[in-house]
Length: 132
Image (cartoon, rainbow, N blue to C red; front, side, top):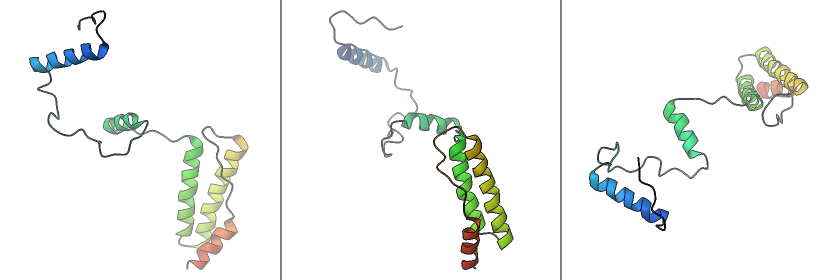
C-alpha cells in the first residue's frame, strides 16, 4: 500500500517522488515493451481510442444498432442486385430489402434514425440492364 500524501506537499511532487523511488527500486524493469515505442502513437487522436483498443485486444465485436445494420444490409443488397446474374434475381433482391425497409419504417427500430426509403425496383433493374 502506498503512503498517504503529506499535508502541504503538492500532489505532482509527491507522485513524482513515488515514481522516482519505484524506478530506483527497479519496479519498472520487467515491464513488457520496455524501451520500445508505445503502440498506436502514429494513429489520429480519437476520444474513444482506448475503448476501440480494448475491443480490438480482447477480440470482441460490437453489434451495430438495428437501424445501422439495416442501412448496411441495404447497401449490400444494392451491390448484390447490381451484380445479379439475371434481371429476375436483381428484382428479387431489391424487393426483399424493400420489404425489410418497409417493415422497419412501420414498426420502428432502435438506434439512430433509419433515414432509408424503399428503393425503386424498376430503376435498379434498369441500371442492371444498362450495365449488361
